[in-house]
Image (cartoon, rainbow, N blue to C red; front, side):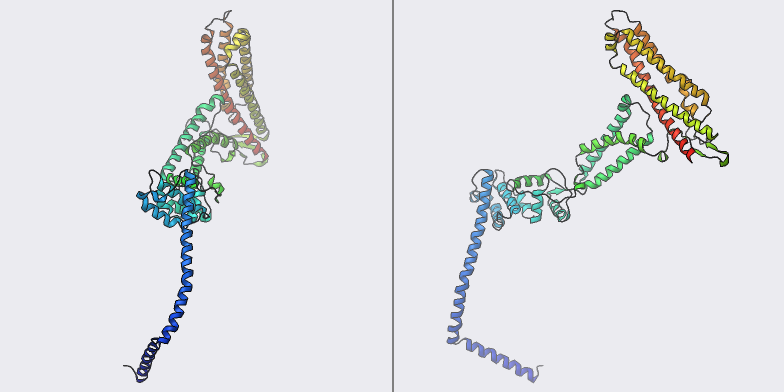
Length: 498
């Protein structure tokens, strides 16, 4: 229901509208407003027409500029109207290229690469499909990205690389590459262990604790896991991405450097590099751990002397308790012996003497090894008697060293570990073998007739081979005993200072 007031207002509004329509319909009003609108239309119509004319000319110029640029690069005229079979792709290209001037270098380069592909003999629209979906930042990143190496980008560039990855132009670490790195690492570790156990001992005889090898492999595995984690943060172009980049770079010369995380970008991605790193770790880490790892952190493969204060510290005695040298690891019994302070200092001197004599023995084995590579030439040029005399001289030096060590063994074998460490000097062992090898080789050389027979090398080669084996065995024993003597002396010296 409408009230009286509302009804009166509705009637007044209707009458006002009707009156206005009648006034506007008069000839005077038509003449007045008609001329005004015509004048406004004439004025603005010229400006609008001029605007669209300039826009059409600008768009046509952009297309012509791109055609000219492509023609200069590919070295032949370009006529986009001369490829009617590619009309759909060219029309799609022209619609976008018309709004991209040459000053927009990144977008222009990609559009020109797209046109070059369309006009090629086997033209496809692969480039066009992704180029139309790339943003300006994505185009910049694509054109400036490393073509072969990976990169760990910073900030907004990472988002742009993610966009490239979604379009199939870039990728991060995939399963295939990860497996290749792991396989290369395993091969490198195997090669490194082969060198460590079979190649190095031929030239540097030494006894290496298995604990250091295990620790080195564990450290190597941690490095591998960390490397794979870092590689997963790097981006690299796919084959399709590199193809589009290389095609576009023909039209783009202003390359800039992308912001990158330098440490992460330096992580190698080639399996061969990881293989070499693994081999280096396997060869270098165990000796480095043996050399630099504190004694207190080692599990110990040889018995070490542990010195503690005696129950009655006023007596000045020291308790020495080494783990026994046994073939059954399950045994936990220990041999203990109470030493006075003077006895402990004497034992330190014994171990120091043992170490110095082991140094001399290692020097003797090195001198013996130096005779072997060219022994036939020495015998032929220097005379068999001179070479035999040198072998006898070295045998005498080895025997003299054995006598000195045997006196230490006899005098101090009751002290902890001395008897076990010097057992070889009192039994048929490395000394007997080396002395016998030197003596037999010298004897055979002395018995050579003059002039030398042609086959004298074949006759003496077995004796030279036995001498090399004896020298290697002696060098290994001397090196091991030297390291053990040094550890014993260091441990006792520390205990005496407490």
